[in-house]
Image (cartoon, rainbow, N blue to C red; front, side, top):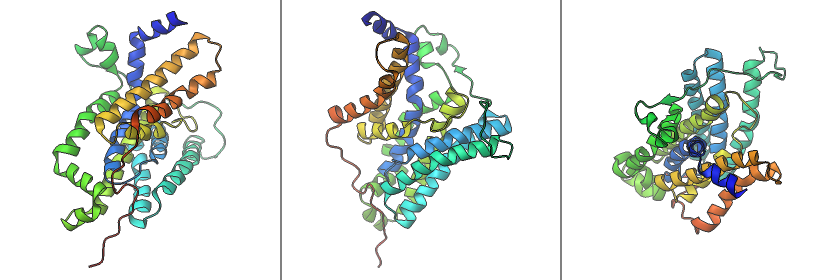
Length: 319
C-alpha cells in the first residue's frame, strides 16, 4: 500500500487533478469572500453552484454553444444571489435560515428544470443521459510543453485559468481599490459607512450578485466541464466546502485559495485511493474530503473572527 501511495504522490496527473478539483472551490470562494466581507453569510453558495450546474446544461444543450451555457450558468447563480439579496438585505430575513431554504429549494428546482428542458415538454422522467457541448482543454502555447509544470498548470479547461487569476485580482480589489474599501467598511461598520455616503444596500446587493455569478460558473465547471451531464445534487456539498475554505482562510483571498487547494488535494486523493482495491468501504473514501474539512477547521483555524457586521441586517437610522 505504501508503494501505491508513493506512486500516487509521484504522479504528475495527481497534481493536475488537484488543480482541477480545487477550481470550482476557488471560483466560489473568491466570490464568497467579497460577499462575506460585505457582512453577508454565504452559506447559500451550494444553491448558487447547483443552479449553475443546471444552467450550464440548459444553456449549452438548447443552444448547442458551450459559451452560452457558461453565461446561463453564471446568470442562474446570479439570480440565486439576487433572491438571497432581496431576503437578507431588503427584507432583513435571518441569513442562516434563508441560506438553508435556498439550498433546499435549489436541490428540487434544478432537477425540475432539467426535466422541463429535456423531456420535450412531457415532464416525464428522463431515461437517457443527456450529453451537451462541453468545455475543451486550452493548452497554453510553450508553457504547456514545459516538463512536469506544463501538464500540471497549463493544460486545463479555461475556467481553471480564470479561477487562479481571480485570486490576485480579488486581493487587489479588496485592498487596493475604493470599491474594496467600501466592501470592507460595510462589512465591519455599516452605520459608519452610511454616514460617509456609502450605500450599504448597493454594496451588499452587488457583492451578492458577484458571488452568485462566480458560484454559478463553479457549478458549470462540474456540469459542462468535468462530467458533461447533469446529476441530481451533483455539487455534493462543494458549496459548503467552499464556505469552509473561506473560514479556513480567515476571510483572506490567499488563505481561502490555500484552503481550496487542501480540499482539492483530499478529493483527488480519495478518487485514486478507490482504485487501489483497499479493504475499506468506498463510502469512507468519499467521506474523506469532508473529514479533512472538519479536521482543518478544528486544528488550524482556531477561534474564527467573522466581519463585525456579518449576518446582521442593516436598517438605516431615521434622522
